[in-house]
Length: 171
Image (cartoon, rainbow, N blue to C red; front, side):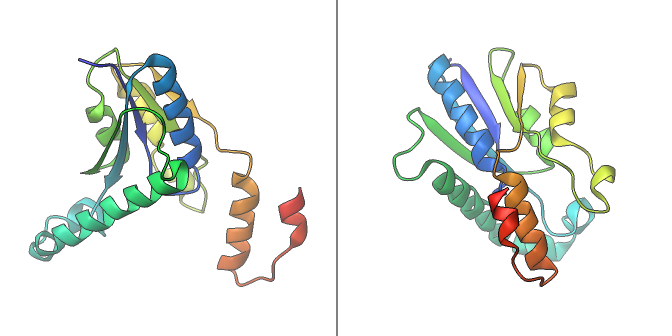
């Protein structure tokens, strides 16, 4: 069995940073790179138990696979990461899906250590903390990239329909 580097992606702004680091680790270890995206039906676990959610399941899964493809394309492009790459979109909560994707102690799990923003941020569980507590292998947490804060500031201004502030992009 080949060694593996498993990395979680969400399609958000922090995914490319974690994916680049995981690809570098896979090259250094001569390991396969497994890119995993966890997804859930809208409404979370209770919403996924209804009959209508089962009927819409293929659409949700297809959307998750497309989000995974977009995350990979944004991060590594057509050239690829330079290692054997496997991708999978798995239904479930991110922390549990990532821990389940790890095979044994020879694997390496790479997760982003982004911030939990918004008014409910502190109430949401941290994927990185969950993985650190439950993974049977080493876990590498990757801080957000240097452009993350300015991009988030621009996105917040757009959400509130405020005019752009060029100073946010030059800091």
